[in-house]
Image 1: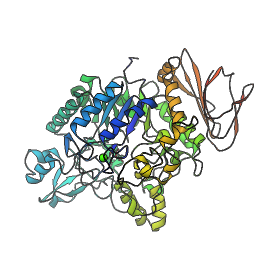
Image 2: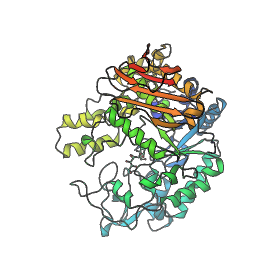
Image 3: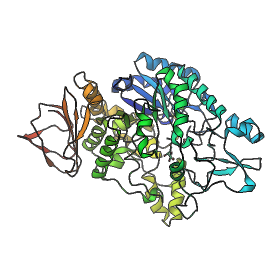
Image 4: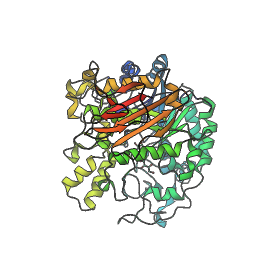
Length: 554
Ligand code: TEU
Ligand code: CA
């Protein structure tokens, strides 16, 4: 296999608005990131993905871009961005920006021009239709309601798969594609490492528009349904790669949902559209067409199966990007550990099981200190547009307001977006002002400053994991070695070998709040990582403590 510069890297996602506020306006910013670069370097991560910082009305927190060539003043200036790129480079780190090109903002000049002259060239940048003909299709937008809304001041309507302030760009129009490529290259020329690519599967629509079977009483159907019928996205993605990323040897990771079964090789094979794509097999587990309130809770066994299934699918094809959380998902420890079992031990186990999977490890800000879901006591505290929609969906389904609040707050995107907990001072040290989103009240117990000097903290465990993955004796095994599940049938136990010609490493997590025995198939040679003080081994039987996590060299 041809080796790529990004194969052995450790990735870290920054959600800038909530990372660190340098000027007291309550909003995290680029200068805040610059100030924390040494912290990130100390953690050991190599590649930083920034969620969007482009000029934006922030209707969807920056995933609605009104100028692809400008930094939103709330995040800083272009000089700050250039400095951040340079400062990262000095420390041997790379930056990824978020590429949001399925849609732009309704405040982008292209959309303004389309409103003024829908029949002119910019009308063709979007999907427009005559209002008089009714809705061209019954698709439901990801944030609720029809994907079609009237184009203000005209007799037309436009399509938006996401919020109505996020009109979809018409990728069938070559001029749109050229504009996008020009922008990508402009950023790559600044010295970026590459991009995380937002909602990319949605760029290809099955045309002409038509209705599909409704899946709720609103008569609409999920976007997932239209994606089943969309063919030929690869033509766009190959063109984009050729015109942009390939010329720079840039790294790309796609946010790819609803891929067709046999497309993995096209997406992340040796000549794939992208370098990597996220494994969302765990995050989509238990989803219901009815909405969040109807999600099925995931168990330890489910989690294990999701991970191993994804690994099997990618085997011999390419590199998945592994996460336990991101800015759209609840905190991993709150989701994948049973309620009330969020001990330091358990958090380390979950982090470890995910981190050493085959693929690229991604850590989301705050994950390294074990940040948890926040408490939402009223809908007035909610910022996330997705939660607002899902709350209404739950009410419409007959849940009481209290039930609806409880059901949706477990999956709210706000859980991941509360400010990073830096210390136990006011506002967790995130800002000298009032934070844009309430700090999680548990910041006095869970924060960076408290964990730094504590040898046994979650933070120091993440540092150890990262250091182990980079250890010259083991790095190749973790990066290129195969993954073989071990005692897969044993309940509440997740274990796997990472193996190559040099090493046989065994990663073990006792995924329950009770001890359990594990019979090994040979005696371990050494313990590379242990989240407990002790290791109890009699011959080949390991007596695991509750939530014990181990990496053994066999
Ligand atoms: O998320 C895409 C997203 O919401 C998917 O889960 C979606 O349900 C799927 O693609 C439907 O086909 C990204 C960002 O991560 C998120 O923060 C944004 O809100 C969204 O795109 C719109 O840009
Ligand atoms: Ca600020």
